[in-house]
Amino acid sequence: MHWVDYQRPESLDAALQAFAANAGNAKALAGGTDLLVQMRAGRCASGVLVDIKNIPELNEMSYSPEQGLTLGAAVPCYRIYGDKTVSAAYPALIDAVSIIGGTQIQGRASVGGNLCNAAPSADVVPVLIALGVVCKVTSAGGTREIAAEDFCVAPGKNALAAGELLVSLHFPPPALQSGARYIRFIPRNEMDIAVAGAGVSVTLADGRFSAARVALASVAPTPLFAREAGEALVGRPVHAASIAKAAAAAKAAAKPIDDMRGTAAYRRNLCAVLTRRALEDAVARAGGKL
Amino acid sequence: MKKTQVQTIVNGRPVEFLCEPRQSLLEVLRDNLSLTGTKEGCNDGNCGACTVEMDGRIVPSCLVLGVEAEGAQIVTIEGIALGSGLHEVQKAFLEGAALQCGVCTPGFIVATKALLEQNPNPTEHEIRFWLANNLCRCTGYDKIVRSVQAAACRLQEEAPA
Image (cartoon, each protein chain N blue to C red):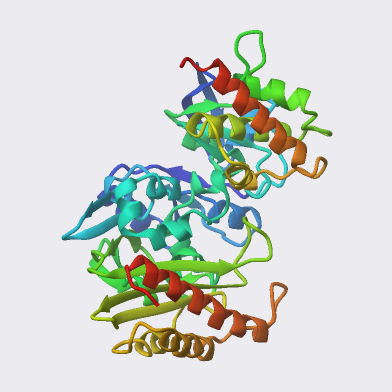
């Protein structure tokens, strides 16, 4: 790896100063499980690593039934699934963070990092989209919010401008009779990159879907918000026929490519199957019956 | 282009070293501190050969910078044995022939010890899932899994009721 300088700010202000002082040449270091690999491969030329793990706001993990969950961008996976309250409130988040890499990677890798890395296959991003997460981004110039579905803009590219830092992710409180699920397809049992993945959330009321969101992994240049698939459910009865319509809409929304992990046609079929299965599980988690 | 001074605790002992910020914890352990029990495999977080414990969590030391060890507690394979005797996990791996070339073994043992500390009686599925980040190209895993189960039995027999 080329020479890098290392800074470890202990406040958000100090971190923003570090980014401002090294405009375009600084990278935020959380778990490093993507960044260090990319730097060694010569795919990231930054000269300054700003370690953001000692900043309180980036380590925050606080939940209340009224406010929902605030998750600091640097919180590693193991802290999330190690928290009983968060695990009970957001099981779909746990679905994703417990299959990112293996145990060792989960000891380092963060949800914020998985999002910023902006891989089309990122396991956690469909969950963030399905749950309606809002990303809080700050810079010396101020703070703004970005919806999870707008955060990834191209393979490996996110919506952050130079000098901006992802501080935290805000999960709305789970609605009554709501459920969510993430599942992916990989040819191995674990430690692999999704051929396709589906993250879904549903809210039920009086035997019908009152809200639903579907997002897909690995079938577009970015994690894909399949808005039509969720809309296909709203107002319809909690029934397999409704879910079949949503699965067909997810398949139609996918824009996959052929690559070494699967063909486009295979991935489109996976979108239908994974969306159906994820929705069935989400309905069960919401306390509904099909 | 200045080296950084780092203070940390390795295997219970306070340690100070100078390193370049780009050096991984793995490089520092092997090249600066001569703790060569931790092995380099893939150097990109896939194989688990370089697994160490850092502040109570197992991590791939190839994806940790040496400078990030400031103030941390690190346990390497050299810190697993108890005094002059081997740890039950080490004994079980030896007796169960859970190794051939041995390059993956330090990582497996560090990871197994951490598993059994938090889950003393894991199912086979839990063992395989926990160890999915450790690759072995010799044994086919079966002997490793059996040895983890044997170590779990022995540690439970030893544990005060």
